[in-house]
Length: 548
Image 1 (cartoon, rainbow, N blue to C red):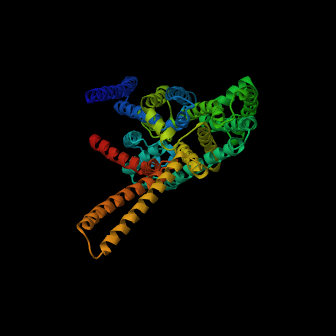
Image 2: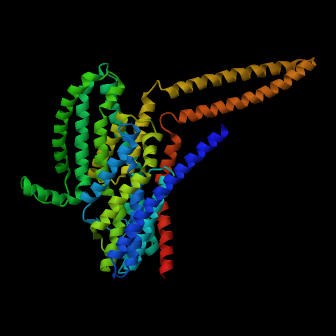
Image 3: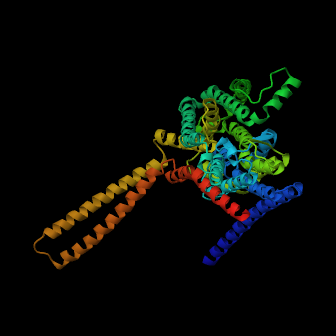
């Protein structure tokens, strides 16, 4: 039997190692391919070797964005079993790449969030190129380490930290816009708090209006269309504000050509975005209402049946979040790469840089490939390891992701989509702790409390017997033997009681929300910017030393 077990372990180890080698091989093939294309397409241009190496760094960064950041878009849907892991990855890969290519824009800010002053570089384009290469590689390395540790972190904060660290190493602390950095630090608190509150509020509303009602079917017919139409408004508004902002003038040009005349502006306003969202919301309300009239008579009057009604909205949410993320966050990978490309091709340093299609393709396909190869690791963490999710909870988290970004954009607050999504997971988990009075874990905690009381009573009885024997003036040989046994039994009971108390304490901390994972994630958030900055500064000095 033991030989068979060893053989099974060997086979499983071989499969895992073979799969890991395959993933590494595909990632290396992609980076070698982009290296070759970049080198050949820029042949004869001075510093084209820098551009080729930077392209590899950009591809590496894009894959790490896919492996880490995209989990926030599809993790809750997978954890709630609204989607399979394979289905979620396929949908996310398609929509991430589509968002990046279709709506990623043709111009990007070379310095993310304006955190450093590019004028401090003067005309030293080589120093600027080295700094951007260091920033790109540092951010990618930090994301890789975070993904390995199963910690979802902000890719925006990673590249911000990388640019800041490389900028300080190149031109000193005066290069940093500390006001902007202060706002980014503030977002570490703002993003998860708002996300958690919004997600908890939606879940509480769903519970009160549907789950806690005696006739859940009738309540669903009334309220599910309302919630789905709110989701439609939020996601379309979010998509217009964030996903289409780079191509808004082109979109308005199409409207002028095909429908009616409108003024061409650089980016959508909140009024325009919310109006489009409202139209879609009204259409969604009536479509969902009609669909429910056909489906509800076939469903049971229980929670599981109500959960099913949120499955399709969750799939749409995952797809739209992925599209908006691909359009918006691809700049984290190609921003520094576009800056290097512009500096190599023009010999100057510019705040804005055009994006050649092949550079955008590196970012788009890199994100999709990273998600396909290494995304499941973080998807499992976000979807199931922090707290247990069902479709209603996952729906509330998705709503928080869209609504929080809309609120923050109107208030001018810098927020992280990663922090919002994870904050939403925390929010629904802590709400469950507050509301649920009959969980199996709570029952287990009560049983453990009773066992501890029994142990205390037994320990007290043993001590009483021991004290009685010790007080006895004339002791027999049997008494001394019993005293020895009692001392040994009391020591064992003390040890058992101590262990039982530790188990109880751990169970209380793990009630619904896994505190150990929460601590790990929050710690990773706090050190993302400084860790990426230190890495970038070290890499800059290394590159400068090699080139000097």
